[in-house]
Amino acid sequence: LKQELGNAIKVSNITMDLAKQVSVKNAAAEVLKTVSQIDALICNAAIAQVPKQTLTVDGWESQMGTNHFGNWTLQALLFPRIEKSNGRIVTVGSMGYNMGIKTIKFDDLNWDKNYSPNGVYSQSKLAQIMCVYELQDRLKKAGITNVKAYACHPGASKTSLIKTSGSLVTRFVWQLMKFSPLVQSAEKGAYPQLMCATEPNLDQSEFYGPTGKNNWTGPVGAHKLELHAKDKAVAKKLWEVSEKETGVKWNINS
Image (cartoon, rainbow, N blue to C red; front, side):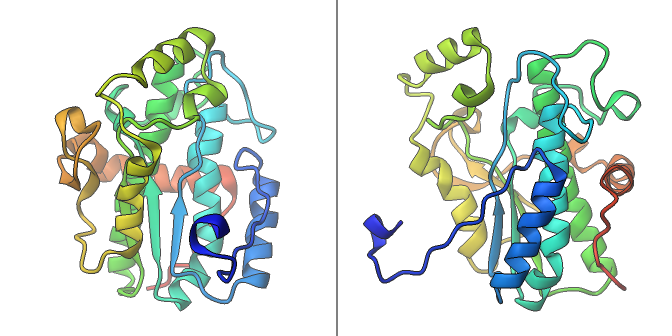
């Protein structure tokens, strides 16, 4: 960042492992201690396509534990500072939300039966997206209008996501895809989240990402979100299950 924007800018970092709740809680505490204002919290980190069922130290399937529960806890703990700052929460989902079952597998959140690398990744991203719209409803019900929550995705972008945790075959296929016109640069993949973090007067009810073919590449804008991602009954249950699993509740008072 300093190479790009100059040494005068203030940049700091706090180490956090989203797969470990204790690490997320420690990092959130450090943020609250050192950061007086949060204009935008961008929840971008994730893992994907873990080939075999792996559990986090907290006992959750790794993709759900990292992508959903990790980000859930971080957002909840930082929410009071975000509210005080009239800030935004930007959740980076994925078009993968629509590439698995169209609901949350509450009876087997760890996928002990029929584990599927892509199926669980899809679940984790569906869970993240659903909680954005459930959060919006809860903020509205509580009369909180100064916090905005947005859901977006990067399309198909040349990042290290698959290389980090995918199987050899998945990584090989993705390496080939990176050379095709179906995949865009990591920089362009960052545009949707940057837009959600900075653009005024965005419609929170929308889903933002590339608007080209399959929503993989192209100009950023609002585009169709399948109805199952806004299933109110499932989203409400997911919120309650997430509170119970993590032991963390959002400080949203009506």
